[in-house]
Length: 52
Image 1 (cartoon, rainbow, N blue to C red):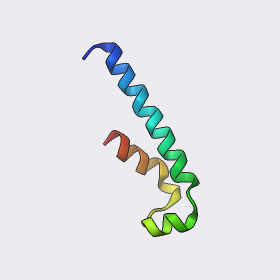
Image 2 (cartoon, one colour):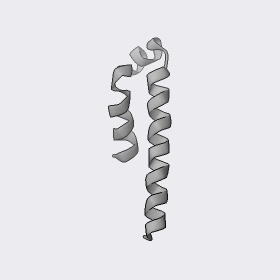
Image 3 (tube, helix red, strand yellow):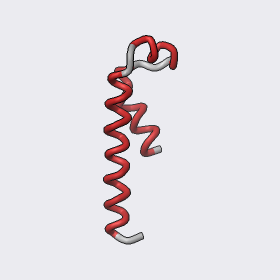
Image 4 (spheres, one colour):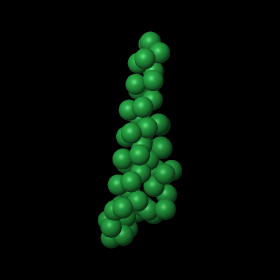
């Protein structure tokens, strides 16, 4: 993998992480309860989903 591809992949993952984190933080409380999640754990959840 070239350096450019590595950088591109890292940027794509960061964008995906930021979007998912924002969506999780802003979801309605009822949805969070239904999913068994805490909105306060959005960063942790997003990192696990995007970065593994």
